[in-house]
Length: 582
Image (cartoon, rainbow, N blue to C red; front, side, top):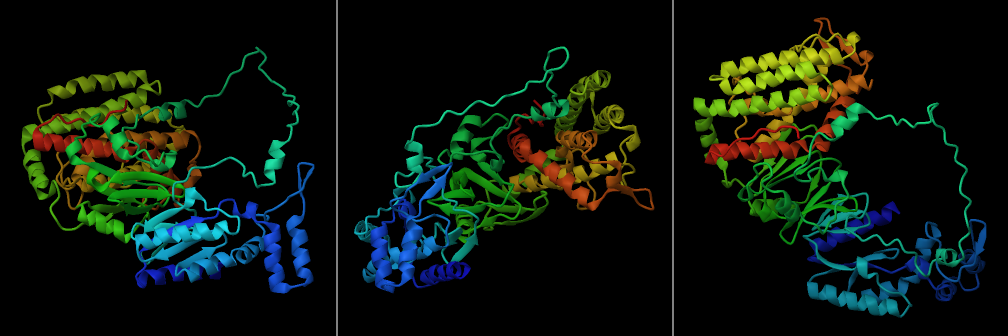
């Protein structure tokens, strides 16, 4: 079978090189349930005459089915899943192959699934007519839901592969969106079962156990309940968590949810693709993102301002060309958010260097720098206050609330930094009381971390910083031109500034994995210089948990929205709003 599929792949690639640009694809409706035994026997006898193998195959085909204590007699069809069935399918469809080849068509078929490679759309339409007529002679019909005429540059799926021009991409399943038909074919032996009178099923005897006080007390996890309602996503970003209707395009979602958090229509959409590997392709001037049997995104190129791919996703050459034609940069990052590079046509985009210059001018003005920094620190203090309030740390959250009210009085960045430092000390003092004593956490320390909780924070902040820097680059801001933190070396200072609004996500998860005992003391080790680090295998677990948390809270979309709000401040003097938990 592997050799057959490889031969099919080679045949399709060779056809493209020979000038074939159109594909007519289809399969036969209910083929294996519809095979007429008499017609198939005639073909077997033509091959082997009176050989006993013909009678043996007849008996095998006509064998009744034992199902749930019932004996069901069949009148037609081949058993699906048997290794003999595809071979008999080839014998049954041999005339169809000959008809198509004699008509001058380049047919490629595997069992009942076939494509016809054509040099024009008109030839593909003629192929449809010829296939329909040939199959009717044998009492078979085409499956209308799986019949398509496609240009090879748009890509088509066949036998688990995506073919685009002469390129082949591996895909575990057909990715074309299909309507699932849960009805049973009238030709199937199962239709006989469903047509019979149903038997009554006795209800099971259930033993109900209650507490001594005759009440039921369900066990709710307070931490997961709190974490679960933390955010309200603005635009569906991590599509692999939802079953999306492929016919509902992103324009609908954008129109319904735009401007909720400073998004301006003229800037365009940042499309962020995360999770398990997807295929990105283009069709009719639209970008399509597909995974398995789903179309996750279907959006016009003109609606976009950039695409960000996190992880090893597959993008077709026609999609890359379309991106360059529409002046849409494609940014690449690792699965953990580390920026890797960009495919760009070299033309100045809607923002370009002009935004960088305005950013530098704005951030160097003391008044503007203080306004932006006050909002960033205000969001940070608000979020940590909510973290403590939800964990019943009322006294500590009240103290931080008092510092939030004082932020408006800060006249310099140094004063603002002082208020932040005081709030952070109160915050980590409260977290110390929430952590098990044996973890030895006293206060925040870094370079190197000296205890397990600090090790988790340092690792989590590094991951968050990478993600922030990546989205900053994607949105066209200059990562190295910060406003609150002091610049040093190649450090992306603006990423450090803007991640303040999201640091609590790392802190909450670090706290949760320790309290739920997902990470234990023996998962860490101490070096000769007393630095504390997470062991490699548990490190992978923690990073995966963080990325899952970022995706479930739509962090990339929230960061993007915060960036747009900052761009609005830089370009038009609009109010800048840093992200706060709802």
